[in-house]
Length: 239
Image (cartoon, rainbow, N blue to C red; front, side, top):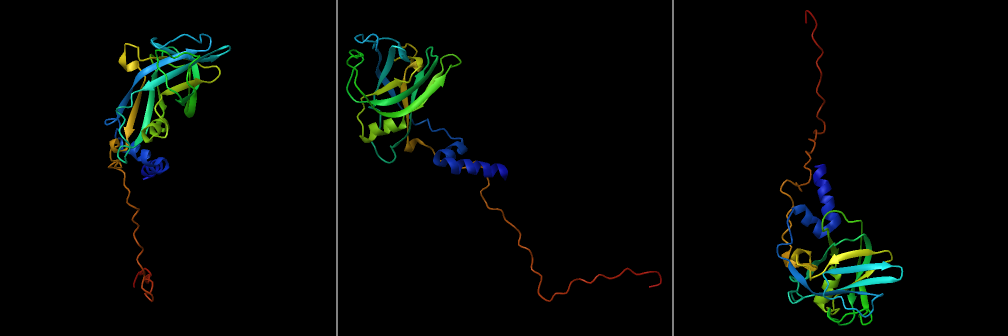
């Protein structure tokens, strides 16, 4: 019963997604993918160079030099807004290509751009920040980062911000490298995975989780006036 109460505590604390975790169900089967259709990075020390055909995206903020990454995604697969089609989760996936450490903001882009013409000098301004992400000393081969950009994709879906892409803005000390869409290994390319409300399966509780309240046996009432049982003294010899 203690385990059951703990599981219920998780579900109530984390609400809808807590129940989803408890059910053990996967919500990714019906997701849609927004592929990267344009990406580049710009450098403050090379203000006129175009980097849109490179297979690596450099993000850095070190003394006298800054590198900023721009990403564009195809939202033609993004379902129109309705209650069942409401975006409930959107994850930006980036694959590491030799980073050291990073802290960076993910923000909307405020102007149009193309990877074939983007430079430091003509880069569009950054808009509202969607989230901030960080990592240090990545381990393993080709680690993949999953960044929650749900608020940003919801803004694209409901029309509160146009889809002009995302920009990664490095904090001081950032030294990161990611694979671009030019990378031959498709699984290494940036993308956004989207989950809609209708794609989240029912979330039944585990079959062994008993939600019934404790049933306590009511004490039997002793009728008023019922005398207490008399204890007969033991009989001695000759009685």
